Image (cartoon, rainbow, N blue to C red):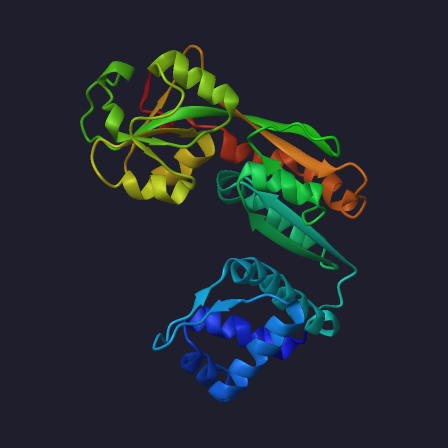
Length: 300
């Protein structure tokens, strides 16, 4: 198995057929076919299902599995080629959920990169459960997650707590109550088990009758339409309000919160300097986590 064979396989998968792949790689169709057949012989599996008269390709079950491996191989080859150019002393990988990376940690990330120019940072976005697995496998050094999970090898520390507020696209200044909200217009993200319990207590169910999404960007897009509403962290509400006029309503009693945890593999020593830098600069998050009174339009 060699690089040219894997390049041919990836080109065929990405382009959808051998003809387009050959043009992309500037080699003949027969060469593409030979390389894929050679790859299948070495792996002793069929990667591509072949049918007479059908030009588009379809991956076999083994082909789907190998595609993921081929992508990893491709990334390793890219990293290897960059060794001489980068000249970094250390590589540190950080993974966080969308709402933490994009709305809370941006200032800290910029500070890390600025203060540690000998470190190559790789910042990724995943869901909490995926981040646990990546940390366990030492693919990621540090994770920022919302959902807890039992793990024998991963250390979990509470990193911060953040208040959740109601945001709604409604021009009217009429008083908003939980009963006045249209349940079918809720934009829902699961902010963790503490939030799920709060949601069930106040709405009668832990999930939603509206639209469930996984990214803050989608909530922001839906909020362009009248009467859509969401319960979101303060950091997200502040970002949204910079783009359009929204009602931001705080909860006076029994305030919903979300908890962000920092996780790392207990025997991983690769990231210790980065870990301490994050803790030292933790106060930089404060501006994202606090609402000014001028930003609040009401209370429930």
